[in-house]
Structures are given as C-alpha cells and as structure tokens.
Image 1: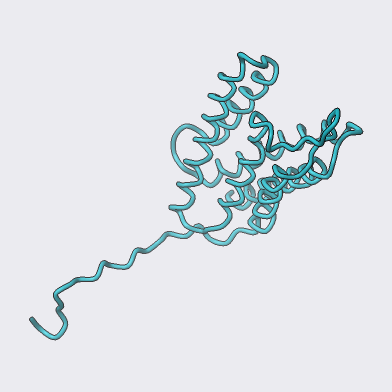
Image 2: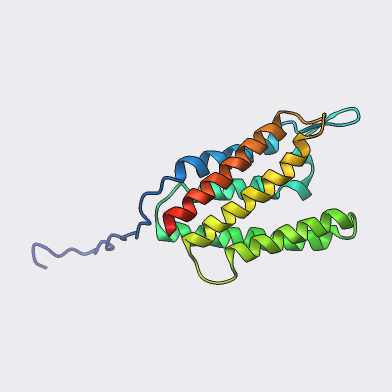
Length: 184
C-alpha cells in the first residue's frame, strides 16, 4: 500500500445538475404553501357548525396540489424535478381513481373531479419530464382553483379559509405564468 491508497475507498461525490435560478419560486412556493394551510382553516358556515375542508376528502385536491407545487420550488436540481413530475402524475391518477369511486355517491361532484383529474393529467403528460409541463400544471391548477374558490367567495357563508384560498390560487396562477415565461 502506498501513501495515497487506503483500505476503504470513499464514494465519488455526486454532482447534481441544477435548473438555474427562477423568479417564480418567490411566488409559487408561498402561494402553494398557503393553499395547503387553507385545508385546515374554516371555509364555510354550515347549518349548525363551521365546515373545514379537512373533513371532506373529495375536495382535498387543490390543497395537495398546492403542497406539491410548493415543494417543487424548494430545490433546484433535475432529480427533484423528476420527483415533482412523478408526484404530480400520481396525484392526477389518484384524482381520476377517486372520481371513479365517488360516482356511486355523488355523480355531479364525481364528474367535475374526473374532469379535473383528466385536465391535470393532460397538463403534466404521461411521459417525459420537463419544467414547462410543471409550469403548465401550476397554471391549470391555479386557474381551476381560482374558479372553484371564487364561486365559494360569492356566497355569504364564506369564511377566512376560502378568502385565503382565492389569494393562494391567484398566486399559483401568476407563479405558473412567470415559470412558463422563464422556461421559454
């Protein structure tokens, strides 16, 4: 054994490919996180109680998408982008499967949920991995969430969770648009 060899060779350091700095992260990250937090805030006044979104699993999709998109802004590596795309695809498929199971209980809600799942699957795609597709998914979810929560804000029973969800959905939409421009 020479002076430079040892009994144990250390693994070579892993080099992570980076995506580069993106300005959308300052918008998309906080907006997605705020949308996820709204899952636990009071949304509507019911007949005799306050309604929290946490108690209705069929309406969790925008909140969970917000969390996944917020986590997508946390790292700048290509590997993390692959994980994000995989998580968004799984979430889109779970939305489609959930709609299929929900059709037995509530047909109208199930059809809307199925439409959302198909749109999200079309936005992220079934193959490949690109930052542009993630940006399109953020735009689609921001738009759909803004429409959904905007309808609830128009009712007199809306509470703080719905108002903050509208704000967060608008942030996701703007962040997704900035992200799309940055990837061009």
